[in-house]
Image 1 (cartoon, rainbow, N blue to C red):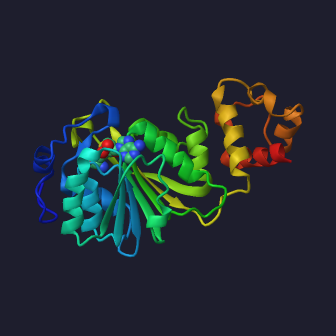
Image 2 (cartoon, helix red, strand yellow):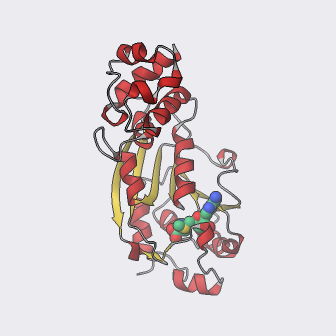
Length: 279
Ligand code: SAM
């Protein structure tokens, strides 16, 4: 745990500021600054970028991002107890850190950021998935971000990068791979966190493509895919019955057999189906 900056070690920060981990906020902290710097490096060259960090907690990843040269970090943290510790980081890094105390699901950060923008976060599972889906489904593309570097529990990370035919293939895989390049770049055991969670984790890096791989309306695609995978064991003609009275014809027009199941259908075919449904 060698120093990456002149600030105190994270264990001391946590004890000085009384930041005992709260389960209700999904607090599993990374205390090894070498590890957080390594995660920050997965986000790419930060020197020309503003970085949006969600859930900085005591600031381990924040310090990694700053020490790796981020032009600016905007950090949104819900837990008010973390504010004094984060203020110390802001002072040590010449104000390159701006902190907003609030709920990332409610705050629009864009007024505080200058493009190009990258996103990095170690978030509780439910908040992370909700934000990921929002970041992947804006009406217009390219989005405000160039890349997302996000910690997830391993099982969720596998769902993001899954390919057709696998058990983990579903809505997250389609939405992520339709408009981004997604890969798992790091695996972390429970012991990397304090307190250790029950499951292993992985860092996923997503790079926004200049345009979607295949044309489709994001709302329609998201709806079709959600319906198809909601009843993933059913044949598509049954799972998608409510979408259109002539759903079998539309499936065929998209190059999909109505007797197929969702997990056999490729991203390209789902996009074709979304176009047929929107017709
Ligand atoms: N980034 C720190 C690290 O890696 O050690 C903390 C990670 S901890 C898994 C998740 C952090 O997200 C906590 O600090 C928690 O308070 C914060 N958090 C949880 N829900 C949030 C929300 N809706 N908006 C902003 N921050 C949130």
